[in-house]
Image (cartoon, rainbow, N blue to C red; front, side, top):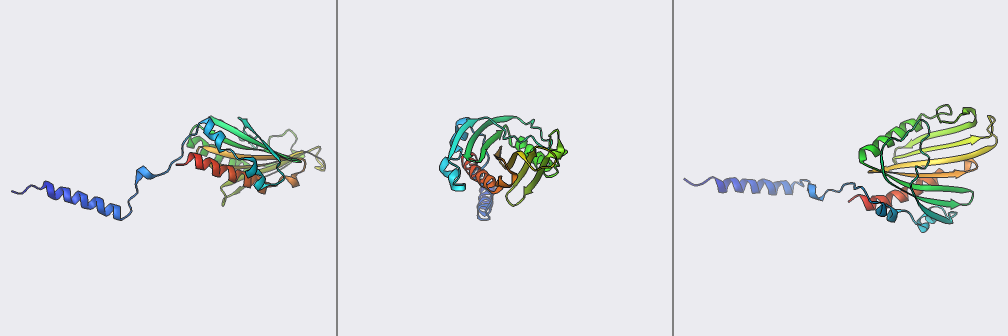
Length: 215
């Protein structure tokens, strides 16, 4: 009697060839997010040329460690663990800011923090902003779905007439794998925050982080 083993082997080979022809996914070739070391994040930070390409008024940058870009507004309390945080501080005269890579310990923590921030920023009002004098606060939160971007801008005024500003801030946040990429700008007038600049700086930093962490 002829052995059935050659026939079984031929069938297995045929199935494998057919699967390849149908474009079966090659798991070994799939990209995934990686947790970067501090030195890898440092090398991924935006440069002065990149910052000036976004806003020519930016005339200097300084690199630093740590920082949360003051995201804990509107009831946001970060409890997720940070593995590494590195910042780039920029100066555009009347406007100053920070671009931060805040890498969490895992994707789950980054996603949870991003979603909580989004929900609380969108619903944020002067009463929930976190300042002792709500009548002196103007705040607006948005989520730009097309960019996957959270924005919050606020001003704190001298008094409830809201005619003289103590300080105004604009905040933009994107999530890239394990990290939140955050840009904050600070100025004297809410009309000069330039959220479009915050968005562009966040996008540039997101591209550089992804190039280093997603492979």
